[in-house]
Length: 196
Image (cartoon, rainbow, N blue to C red; front, top):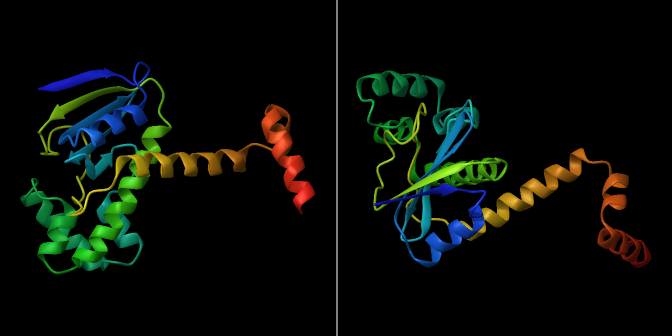
């Protein structure tokens, strides 16, 4: 069974809350113009997320952060060509090139990044495949990363993504524009100046 729709009709945070409260399992596929993402839920918690909007995969992130060696990464790429059903992080883990704790931490950060990216998309369509946890053939990506052992609360991911969005937005908008744009902000700004 699948549920299809548009995030114009149903907000992403509302949909995440429905999946969380209902303790649903399955894969959510989101399409936005030329990019797509997939988010896997187990018992209402997010255990995997990936998108083709990023140039780097989780394997590249592990390499870039110095968690895995270049030589191990290159071997994993060659093995992946022979075993396309396995992800680079799974191969690296199987070869003891990375420990599970490091994979879990990197995967959690990756999930947060993917959810943040999805929050930036407008006019997205979605399809939720109930009880389908297999990430393969959902979207076209170079790699499907790693499934975290302990799922992440989707409401936390939405709040964290919103916080990052707000911080990024404030960096690019001049403070005076924010001051003029929001009467409530003006009151807050006056209050904080008085408190200082």
